[in-house]
Image (cartoon, rainbow, N blue to C red; front, side):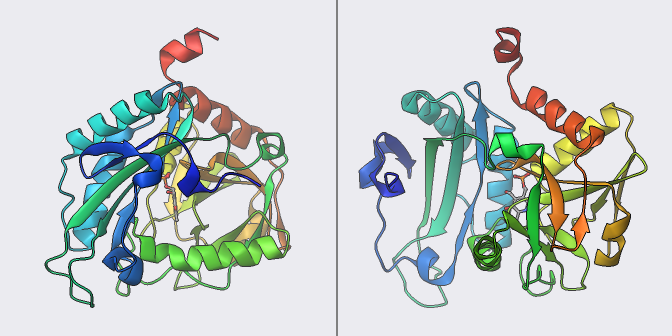
Length: 297
Ligand SMILES: Cc1ncc(COP(=O)(O)O)c(C=O)c1O
């Protein structure tokens, strides 16, 4: 049995201080726990450097703003704390999880006086999906829940509450033997997986849903840039599930998922991971590793 996450060794940065990992605790009457008043990030360190660190910390700030609160540390302060923590943890390739949440000063829907807490944890981490499996492509279920209307929830925020339906959908998919689930949006359009954006290939052109009700991922934007650098045309548009039979390749993108080819969705649509998926998968890995680490190989 793996060591539980609250029992790992090392340090966590919490509210401005580096404290022992096991001491980074909160009270049971924490607003963030009861009312999901929390925003977070998911970042990856490669070769000792966090990829697009400042963009992630800026998004943490933006997410908090969508939720009506302000992260009490600047983006630069969060960047510096992350860099120092990565050094203290001694990891080269790792996962970085900053989180900001409303504390326990008031309990109820209103939390005007609650302190905004911030923590950063870093742990050693390999590939999200088994790398050997990557090029074979993973199989996705079609989720029952849909990404909500932006009039219903702050869909641009990386907010804890928005992950409720992701965990339900991922658990349901895993129970049926799938690796993850594809979610449609409130209009029935193809949206994203439970923790990653999605791309399709047709006749050498990349197609990806417009991110108008879900996260416009940092990896998504990176992959669009990498594709353009290769001269691959990218079309951002509404994609209906009926169209999926017309695509030859499919892959997911995310800080955790990186570029992960997909072989099947919902037991209904099949794809063959091909040249474009493989090229972008490799280009992405080259992009995330610091130049010095690649040169030393
Ligand atoms: C629901 C969801 N969509 C998309 C993404 C991809 O975002 P990024 O590439 O910024 O990690 C993530 C990962 O954070 C996610 O959780």
